[in-house]
Image 1 (cartoon, one colour):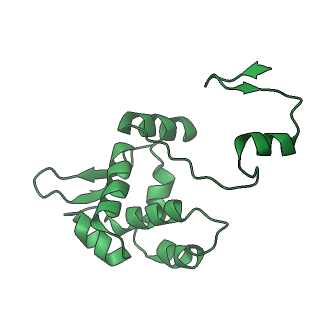
Image 2 (cartoon, rainbow, N blue to C red; image 1 turned 120 degrees about the vertical axis):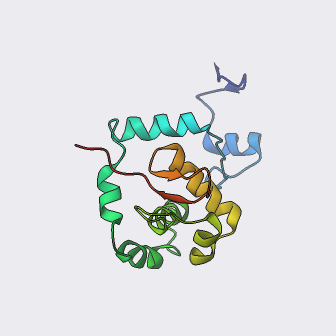
Length: 148
């Protein structure tokens, strides 16, 4: 018997069928898992994955055109791709790289998202340093790329 961190015992000799019977579910059954991360945890993960960079290449790719959005739209209904990742990229692209920025409600309306959903995306991008928020106007814009 092996004890997991949850205190549950697992017998490596159990067969798949006996595990299914014991736990009352199919092993191939897809069950959602939700993880809640604090802003600093998101920033840490992005920093580790990007090697400490603020993803300047991504910001440069988004500058000036809506080509990214036109390539993303057809993928949104394809189950092989992460819908939330694609939508997050669309939200990032919808925020201008300079000037006055955009309100969350404008981004939400343009992309067909609820304001709450759009807010979660812009808040996440802000937490990892790719968007910045003007505290007076509460508008978001892309953060300037760091000098190389």
